[in-house]
Amino acid sequence: MEAVRRTLIAGNWKMNLLREEAYVLIGGILQESAPYTGVDTLICPPFLYLEIAVQITKNAPLFVGAQNLFYEESGPFTGEISAAMLREVGCSHVIIGHSERRAYFRESNRELNRKISACLACGMTPILCIGETLEQRTTGATFETLNEQLTYGLQGIDGASVCTMVIAYEPVWAIGTGVSAESSQAEEVHRFIRDVIAKFTDEESAQALRIIYGGSVNSANAGELLSCDNVDGALVGGASLSLDSFCGIVRTADSLKKQSAAMS
Ligand code: 13P
Image (cartoon, rainbow, N blue to C red; front, side, top):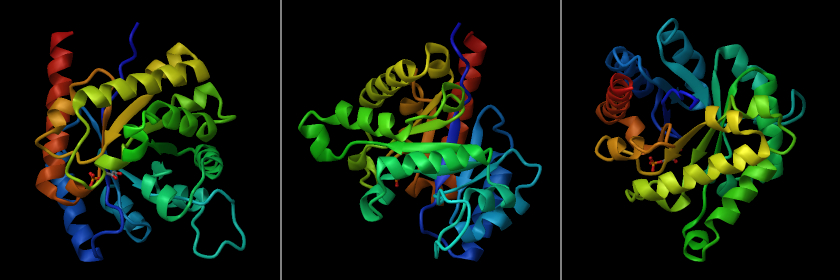
C-alpha cells in the first residue's frame, strides 16, 4: 500500500525581516492559513524570533523551525546554538545543510551528519537540504552529487529515524534566481532520492519519507510542482516573506490534497 504523505509547506525566511515585520507576518500567516488544515505549514524565522514565534502560534496548526543548529551539546562554541536550546524554545523542525550554509560556511556532509543526529536526539525533525550546482547539472553530475550528499549526510542514521525526516531537494541554480526546476526535473530527482533512501533503509521507510522541493517556488508555479507524485511539499525562500505569496502556496497545496482525497 502506498504511504500517505502529508504535504509540508515550509518558509525559510533566511536572514530577513526586523522584529516588527516578523510579528506582522507571523500574525498574518496564522490568520490566513488557519483554514488550510490539509497540509502542514512551517515557518523558519531567524533564531532571535523563534521564541516569540512559538508563543504567538501556541495551539495553532503552524509549526516553527530553525534554520541551523550546532551539533555539540554545550561548551566553548562562541556564537553557536544547540539542538537542546531549540527544542526548549519549542522548535519542531530544523533546516540542515542549506546550500547557502554549504557554500558560505563550508559545512561538509560529515558535519551535517552530526547535526542531523543532534537534531533527532532532541526529538526535532531535520530537513536535510541537498542539491546540485548548475555546473554539476550541466556536466551530468547531478545524481552523483545527490547520492554523495545523501550517503554521507545520512551515514549511521537508522531507517526508522530517516523516515521521520524531511529531505529538501533544492537545486542551487534555482535558488533565488526566479527560475524554478521544471516539474518533470523535480519529479525525476525526487524519485531518484526515494530510490536511494529505499536502498539505504527499506521500501516502506522510503515511501513514508517526505521529499520537498525548493528553488523559486511561488504561488504561480506551486500547483504544477506540487502535483508531482513524489513532490511532498515546498521549501520556500523569497515568496515566504510575502503573506499573499506564502499563503497562496499553502492554499494551493491544501486544495490539491483535498482534490486527491476526494478522488481516492
Ligand atoms: P527561493 O524560494 O528564494 O528561491 O529560495 C529557496 C530556498 O533557498 C529555500 O530554502
